[in-house]
Length: 366
Image 1 (cartoon, rainbow, N blue to C red):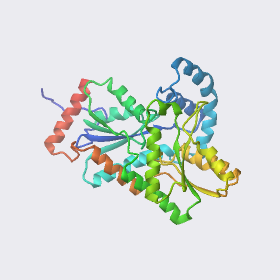
Image 2: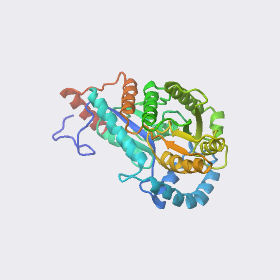
Image 3: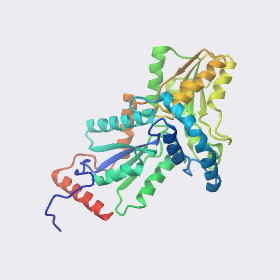
Image 4: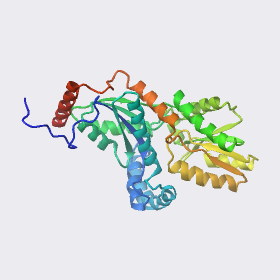
């Protein structure tokens, strides 16, 4: 079969990943703007995921649409507005920047790997980014969640989104999935570096509080490893910092609903600490790789207020990894390890032609 004209690609351009290999960096998601309608759309998608809420669907549908989506969007929109950046939602800003910096770091090391970001809920969606990568001739994709600790509520849900997209594709690219990096030495070192930088500039508080996002306690009983991986991260981070067990606390934040969640809870713990005589705390959120609503508003505003109101004197929030060079290097290190055996070098002319032909074939097959 021959072509009289140059093949046409979906995006008007030939494949951009010369090696045919890409990384899709996936985060939770965010509303498009800090308004009630945008929050209603976002929360409707987020809270409809059976991985996030495991209540029977019929009962949960009535609760979600009859109560939550009528009340919560306006309140959540006000919270988002309080932390919204000029470029948009902090979570999206940092996720996009981390993906770009990871691509630059890999390119500097000689890897021709396309790196894009996607959101499990909201935009850009995982499906839309997979469509774009496939149209660009990518045939190998590493799915890299922005969640260091594995949970069925987060990491597995990202996998669900990929599988859902794949169910409608005839000629699939190869996939690899990163499940966790809670104990990766580079990740731990990058966290410790952020804390040491804060201590060097501001001094060390009486206690270091490590606050992780909470999940219902029943997930632990059902076999979810998240609780154990949070504790391992905390232990390794404390060891790196030279802290003993009396110098730090591990807590869980962001409770939702009336069910029992993993304990100890962050805000009540901070209140108890202040009432017990602890005058100053440093608070860090190791489970979040980029600052977002849960760190900037829930911790640095609400939890700060609760601690000071209870008698504490100094509340120091230590920002997330964000664009820390050590964090980007760590991302590049374990991404490269996960890509082992896949071609990541710029292709030769003949290989590029094959990649273009593969992209056309993939498009025609669907």
